[in-house]
Image (cartoon, rainbow, N blue to C red; front, side, top):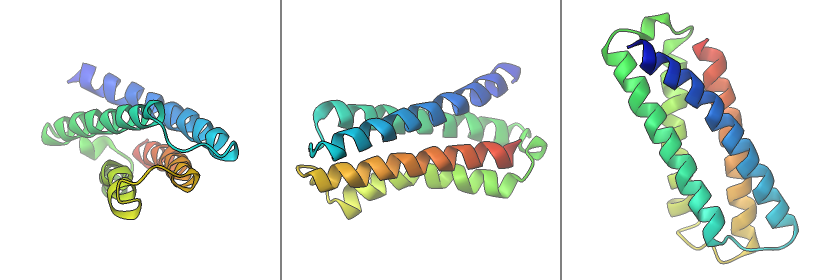
Length: 127
């Protein structure tokens, strides 16, 4: 289980860095008036997959009794669950899959920056 703890911890750093880069890239594209393209959507999918893997690893740790070692375990789990559903919610419910405008680029850029903050907060309550 030690390797799962190390990967879960390291992946959390990867996630916040990835979402920060994705948010800054999205802001750059939005300022230039560009709509969402396939490259940005692909990066969003990669980010979502990272959160899914992180959730699976966290679930494995929880099932094996390692969650009591987390500082505030309830909030840590809530931040993780929120991070899993927020990006798909924004894309499918708020944008309704319509990403052909620069407004959608703004929404997704700010969403990724928000998820960057959620990742940092989940790390801080999990320490």
